[in-house]
Image (spheres, rainbow, N blue to C red):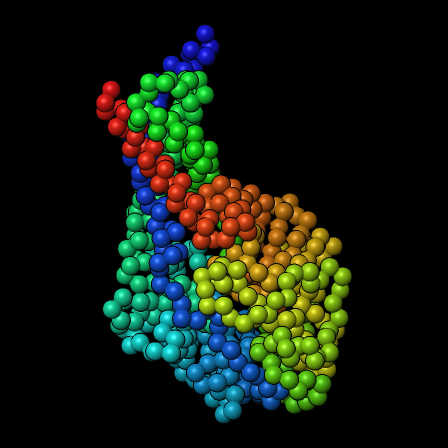
Length: 504
């Protein structure tokens, strides 16, 4: 009796939800196809890694001189970076304003150079060896529909080119990173995804997007659950019409994936609709630069090429942090590394110009050396100690609450390619919210923060919605191919169901 009741109820709701289910499934499934399509056919960078540079000891000694000359008393980030003019001093004194640049040889400030630097980087990433005419450059401090919050990095420069494809690049100058890339083709596909998959066009109406999308997802879930009930309770007949047989077979194949898409999508919608996220970049407190000594000799500075130099603060003391290329680092006396330090990959292979390289990431250096800015003497301070101290400072917790620290040299489950920088340190903290924080010791920035509620939702969305668990097994391309096949079968299932409904 109970089985007959459930069979009747399943059949009733499966029929009632046909039309709304068809609309929702076609809208979400067709728009979802734009994701792998963009991954395969979207614009690709001419270069995947930031520009290389070689920094010498004299340029390191010039940092204090230049800062004193221009009476720069405090800054958020101070570092040497490669540019079209060679190595220059970059100073970040605001989280939302353009950065300042100084020529190391003359000591003079380079006016409006952040924009020029962004233009040079855009040419490097987009045009490569064949420069393109630049149509416009715009400094952007907020996310928008073309550059949404998932990109993480702000502020950026949007550089637009005058080529046939209307190519554009979003440049984050602090780490010389390509934060995003587009053209007319990508813009059109993204518009399909935003309007049909995330319903971004309803963002300006409070709560409307969440309510409408939640109802659509619930209708798909109910339709699918009723269909699964019919599959389990109704036996296949020998004289079934071909459409019915195909509908039934396709239902067996896509039932679980379809339910997984619904559940993970619903959780994702509610999580980001009603919760404030802790994700994203956070700058530390300004460093007080008065203790920089321009007369320091830095006698122990190794006579090898450096690829990264910055000023960092630890226990209210300033240090020069020197980063080395892999080959040079082997010949330099290392700072001490405490237990629990590096246990990640150290593959410093050459740049791989492929889509895979973009998602896996490659570290720019090995661990750094530290020299006291006041005395010029090499310090025993190391990246792990600095990262732990910064994590405690950002979270306002005691160092004893740190449970582990791990060097991250590849993008992965908890720290993905959207953060753009490697290596970083992952610091796990015993806190009420289960913190994992990711610290860049080069600049002292908190690059990302992951708490339990965000982490669990990320597992759901990554595994059930994006199928990231398949990437290590078959690679991104074949994972995307499988997703396309499943989405195509879901569309076929819906169309067959409508055809059967119309026939009846």
